[in-house]
Image (cartoon, rainbow, N blue to C red; front, side, top):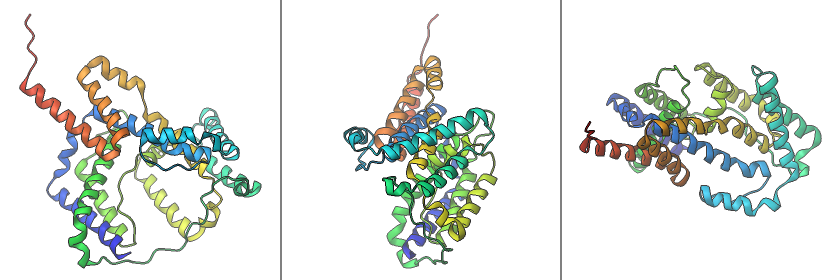
Length: 322
């Protein structure tokens, strides 16, 4: 617990230092085509990551393409009851999105699934559920200063990952007409979250793509959404843990997939291809980078590729003779 607290608070301190040095400008190297490719790659990764939960199978995750092979191999082992729960969740989401778009659709789907799980005893029928959720408020945990020298390299890497993914998600989910996220302000926000969370034993944190997808698509627009999430987390620790225990994992997977599939936008990618071929290549590189290398390495690969392309163009400007 002391090591976790030390690590999280070190991550927060590094992010605060980056803000003091005004290093948020580094986010400018994440261009809009790179963000488009990042979104598409994240969408594919999220879907493949959640499919085993929809089918009620377990696989050893080793990477995007290997995971697809493993899922295909385990298809005969799929649980019909788990798949039925997932399809029912999709049906609820699609129905309410069509007939009552302003309704809290994910909440309705999750509530219905919990009720069905408890009433029909879905766990006994082979449906995986969330299960026991530890309750109670966490104790105050102070950092161990003796671990700082051992942990700071890992903290620096986590801080870079946290900032890169957070700002990339912020850019990716910004609605048309929204101001671009202030990268220096994001450093303050993530840093404060890690510093305060570390005092209560929280793991180092940052922005997440699947959570943001669900949040944004269901109507979140301001910081109030995060305050509601925090309040619900506290309520769960104190009161709601037994209520959420019967929730089927297939329902959670269905909700995440339903609100993440929109990250893959063929029309947006096609529009970029029509305007400029080299930027279309950045889109493809970012998408494949996330799929093959993972989120952080993928986005860094795309950023480095776009920077190299810009340097090439600067040193070899096109000359058109009329």
